[in-house]
Length: 178
Image (spheres, rainbow, N blue to C red):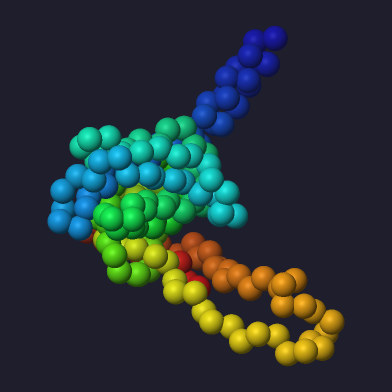
């Protein structure tokens, strides 16, 4: 009986260790805290996982989410937008704190932040980026293309996840190889 209880405690501690929190501040284009800005965490398959808004100091907190691949979208029509990608580690995932997100009107590539012990997961990571990739214009399907109709076709960009990590003493931004 004692072994069962100890095993259950050990398993529960392992499961709870993979939960993380993400906190930080959203700044407007002038570097001032952006209040009442919607912050939405999306899963890798683009499903909303967690939604919150910044407080009057521009701060936000996302608590107790699984350490997984996510996409954080911050968007406010007048103030700007920013997107950040998150990547888990096989183990030793930890909370991301001090994340500073500066809104922008420009379309730029999204930075990657990790939950692990690598430099991109360190405290005080700054993100100054917006939209990930511009949409590609695809010519319409030609008539009779393998019996497909244009409305039945969806074109998606797929990223290949890379496990390479570069280390440095400075906080860095690591990008996935696409």
